[in-house]
Length: 449
Ligand SMILES: Cc1ncc(COP(=O)(O)O)c(C=O)c1O
Image (cartoon, rainbow, N blue to C red; front, side, top):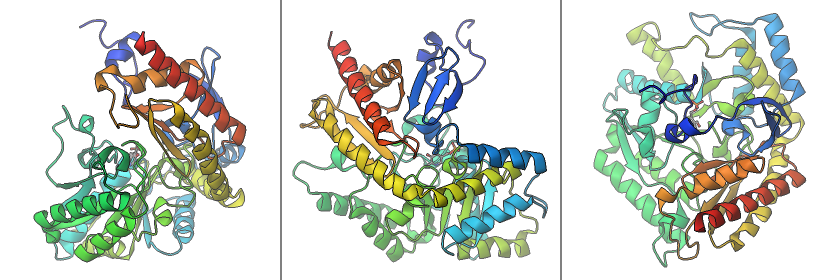
């Protein structure tokens, strides 16, 4: 076996067959939306790290907030009835920024922990609130919600389960929303939406709504391919969930904190979730932090559970870390004072208009844009919607060609995902798109040889 696993770091979400041959990219420093590797090569990071460094890699106010917090109280936990002042202030500011829709905040250290926690809180609420049958979670194909056992169970992406003895048996799987790939020939957007909402309804009814604790969903699926829902989708889903009395948990780990031009992605679609999970952009990636914002019902249920179970048997050492909390507070201030939502609206238009030009490449089937999220769907024949044979690894080749040109993107199969820092300006968008165009042409030409 010697020579197989030769790297000291186990890289997540990495093809270790490729990785054995290719050296990892080791980043030494960052400036604005650019990062530089240890060899001095510069890249535009059009994925903001892993969908999280929303203000780029050198924001002085975040660095100052972290430095001051380290000087004041470098470590404390949010447990045993104790916490740091920064953590309490952050909870209050989050609840206020969310307009009073939520009543309390549970802090973890990552998105997976936030999702895992909300699942446990839903079950606790059912068990102590007279609805112990409410265990099932509605989740969509292509969804991604993290990697811990519960969060990974929700995933609608097979590689999150394969080899891991997952999923656990508590899901009701319903269709993803991907009009371009999944609509039937001749089917309109409205007809498509009606069909998948109907299927969702049938699956929930088959499972029994009385057995369902919640639906967990991203307002816009990110890791599943940046799937932007048609206009009618969320209103129809909201009606369905209300009719079947299924609460919505909005997974805002990618969509929150300005990514879709609002504090939370659900606001863009007019949804009323019972809870939201956040991480990544909450600190613009400058410190690890996750959280669940809990509505009145879940807040009351956790309080009431004490009468049945005593001590809340859930928590984590790093959840609500004082330095991360201080950074998150500074991030909220920056979002407000620098009018980040307005910048995102401009970024959306810039991405949309410049990416649309890629549609004249025959292998580009669709481009999708919402807020600061975008995707380019590569197809063997874009018009006929004929995909590439996945074995050809076209997406991977495009990402490699992009990297050779100083651009970091993410290949999700044959979808190229873009999630540039929210501070990306017009010239930088043009640079990203022109490098991407060159990368697509090079990958396809190289492959045809
Ligand atoms: C929607 C969503 N939820 C949860 C997670 C998990 O977050 P983390 O990687 O911080 O555990 C992710 C990560 O990409 C995500 O995209």
